[in-house]
Length: 290
Image 1 (cartoon, rainbow, N blue to C red):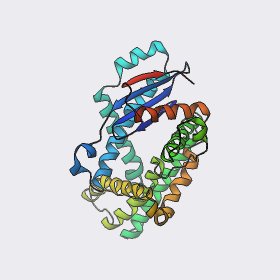
Image 2: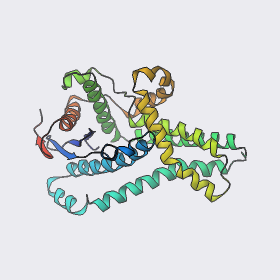
Image 3: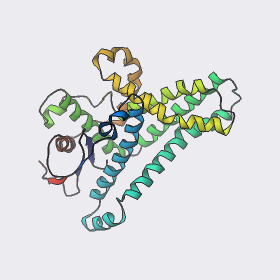
Image 4: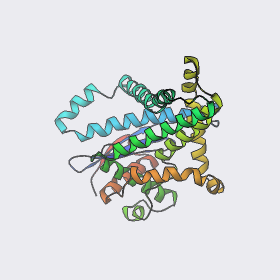
């Protein structure tokens, strides 16, 4: 989010944003996921693929709200009139998916096909190496953008706040400060797992020799997302954490780039977002800065 944090619970998602005037503005929206509404969808792997699409939908809506709060007051009316529609959000999701698939799945495939590698195993290992390299380069380039530092600080504030909540602590800036910015269930860790799982899945498909083979690989992306979701979910269980810890470590290491130590006012925003998910306040409200 831009100067903000989005939190999601089983019944709501809420975005808290610090406005240029210093206030904390909260947008709270009732939302029950498809896997909670339809129990037949709440099965391993399928629920992960569905959750991934829902997260994109919720994330883009929240990003649109945070962006609207960053502009001056006189520009907000124009922003509300020109954006935020369901069609625009759907278009943004399609565009985000298209760019992601092109950059992290199609481009590595093209680069690998330009090499003399022929064997299925070697081909897919090289394809996976290209995919991982492109992803890490992307993260590195993004981190070099100075404006991203504040976003990464808010990312760290989100993790600290969630850690405090999961530990049963009072949600205050003082208690949240004590916790780490590195969380095993972070989206960064999920993306690293996706990169690794894709290598394993694609090995079984062999080398793609036709367009139907390539399309089959792209069709496997929801499966890869579903498997990765289950793996990350499993890593949060104490009984399995030691077994899967080596595979979780790369994601935690990468979070040293994608999260930064937040300021106290950033922790206030993260706490406000989480508070909004945990009670029954109005859908949209404003809180004064504390």
